[in-house]
Length: 112
Image (cartoon, rainbow, N blue to C red; front, side, top):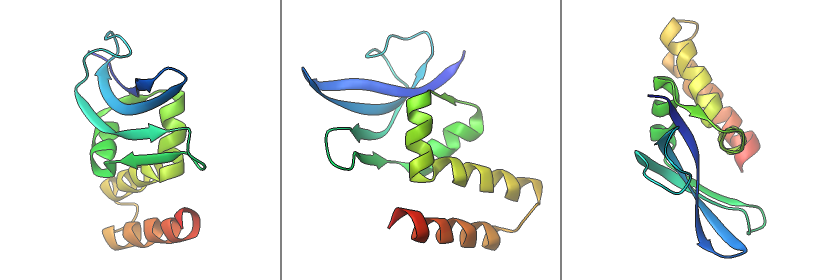
């Protein structure tokens, strides 16, 4: 079974809001899903995103493939960076303290 992380459309006509969900790739866009990871509202300025970062990283580590839009959202929120750093810790490239320091530096510089 191939697992995708994608957007599920909710909301009114012409004012969609999206849930970021983990779903089987064969399921319809607004159909069954495995887990809800957060929400994305493109109508605010800047677009607002609420994410369960730890759950998103764990699904990525398990091999779930994000769609292009979700990949962009994850990149802007640091999920892909966190996954990359955790893989480095797992391989022994750097320690857990270095991983936390690098992620904290990125978070302070780009998120706030």
